[in-house]
Amino acid sequence: MTLTLYNTLTRRQEPFETVEAGKVKMYYCGVTVYDYCHLGHARACIVWDVVRRYLQFIGYEVRYIQNFTDIDDKILNRACVEHSSMEAVADRFIKAYFEDMARLGIKEADEYPRATHTMNGIQRLIHDLENKGFAYPSDGDVYYAVRQFAEYGKLSGRKLEDMQAGKSERVNVDDPEYQKKKDPFDFALWKAAKPGEPAWESPWGAGRPGWHIECSAMVRDRLGDTIDIHAGGADLIFPHHENEIAQSEAVTGKPLARYWLHNGMVKVDGEKMSKSLGNFITIRELLDRGVDPMAVRLFVLTAQYRTPIDFTDEAIAAATNGWHTIKEGLLFGYQYGKKLGWEPGEAEPSPIENSDVERFQEIVNNDFNFPGGLTVLFELAKELRREGHILVHEGKTETSPDKLKHQWQTLVTLAVVLGLEAEIEAETDKINGLSDAEIEAKIQQRQEARQGKNFAESDRIRDELQAEGITLIDSRDGTRWHRN
Image (cartoon, rainbow, N blue to C red):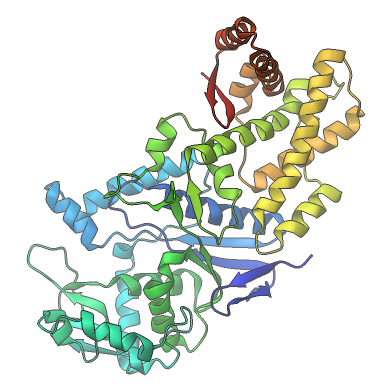
């Protein structure tokens, strides 16, 4: 059961082999902190959180670094509008980031370097590039000489000669920055200070770093010359990750990362998410509507991580129903363990080795196939739900208590790998009322009454559920429900 990953760099799936046996050095390009995180950030952070969890589950020691970009024109623009400072804006949205991620169950990274805290490393890397002939100063700026790096374009598959024609049509020859460059493809490593903007002293004069150099410096400072996994959104492949490779490898002569992994983008109702279209959804807006954070995780994990996903009301409703199923399985031991004669302390998850775990691992080892892995969880959860329903109505189960305990512990163990965790005390209080299975059964009874045109019975069941704190939502795709 060898783990294999699709490597953007080589465009093929490869066996996973780390630089150092048993250890993984992983870097994720984090957020630019000028606004609240949105659905695209939620997907990326959930995906790489689960990748990290899974690597730890199969025995790797993982050092996981995620940066914050806290120097950027967007941050400066917001500071100007708010009559604030770049530091104040960055601090506010970093705090908001941690609040949002905690609600989604994202484990904190081992370290969160910030560009403003990496200034020495940034300047050292620019100096090394200059000494090796890959960078040149120009009137207070410093630029990377793209044509000096023969392998430029190897990650994205772009060739300079193919980009040349289109580039020439878009260049404004009167642009002061263009006039400073030796070549239109060159990009800024260091930008000279502008009036009223924050600046740092450097050998090239006061200024601030370009965006791409920040990540190269942070990877080098925190993880070394070559890491195992460099992760990020597919929108970062070019130019950001391409430029990272050019900067880092020109200095070290070594691969920056052995595996480049990229998550797909999020659409909303089939459209690219943007403020101009009015479909821009932040994480906190979504969760404040009452959407369960675990349903958001499940929505993300039901799609292969490299493919685009479409956020729709129907998709989140399906994920919510799916989470209800898994949640009821997760609560099985706490609800029924005593009835099944489990000893106190036995109703706890524990490390498990069995055919279900092996099957889960064999599936997920195929390029982090989390959707496939979820099928194992759903099978276990549905079986536990069925047995719980039988226990409630018949006073006994069809499966032995020992086997049920083993199935439940397996489900809990695998759910933790995916970050799917039920709030035990709050949920068991709810379950003292109607279980998910009982709710579904009543909804089925109501559906049968409606089909038989017995609307009085249909309304009675709806009102009965409402009295239990259950709201039904009818649509052409069926009936959804949620607890009030």
